[in-house]
Length: 331
Image (tube, rainbow, N blue to C red; front, side):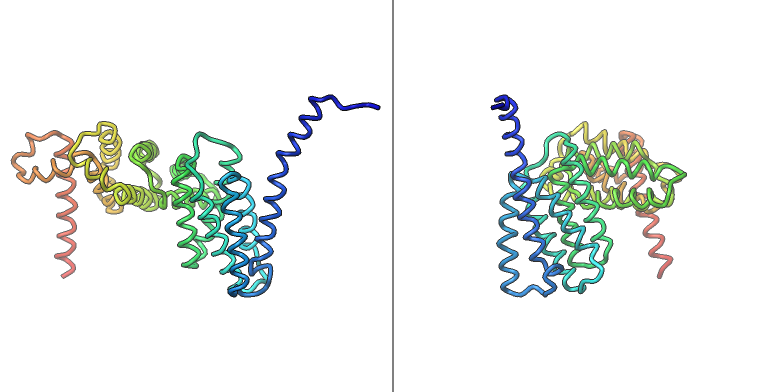
């Protein structure tokens, strides 16, 4: 009787055991999908919601140890719901909200990713693509939930979103692009607006945007909107850090903020008011800038101040003068 070598047998059993989680996770996801209104054809009631909640809790628990597999399964379910054509709108809406909540809670159970992983990056890409479809759908409830999902993805995988934003900015600099590539670039940049970065990540982000500045005129507003949003989110989430920036030197932050401010502060860009909010926020985040500018009220003393303070003060005065002039003319 022939026998299989021990090493081969062990390898076979090992591979089999590795496949097992994927199989029962797939079964769990299938059960979850079958309980959704898009499959049952019925609006969620108390009983069906409780049943879904039980499966939802199981999926959330499993995701702690099998995040990629679970998330890939949930994205497939969401794609199927988004592609539903002959289903009642209410059933689609309820199903989307249920899946989005499950996605969000699974992501909340996930620790920030370390390094890069192809399967994980692909999963994140698929999640973000589906979120963009929902954000664009105009459904307020689902859109708000999708934005929360994107924000959480940013918390655990900011480098992936920054890499996508960089790809988008590259496209927005080029002249010849297909409509499809432009739309994709716009989605990458828009989704970055929902991400909150810590101080070091923010500096990397600002250097990235600066290196790809300026975008083509038709994309200027999108890029400025993204940058303003990222700066505001940093200020809102890290108020203590923001406060310390006003009183303590942070050379790497000064380098990132001042470099971008000066890059934007060209004669042509000064005429584009869409850039002003970004520049104001860069001044606010730049270490000690607000205090230095506030002490530069006396215009006669400007020549004795550091050049970067003079430039920022002149910019603030220019914006203030322009706004005041517009108000006067509108009366």
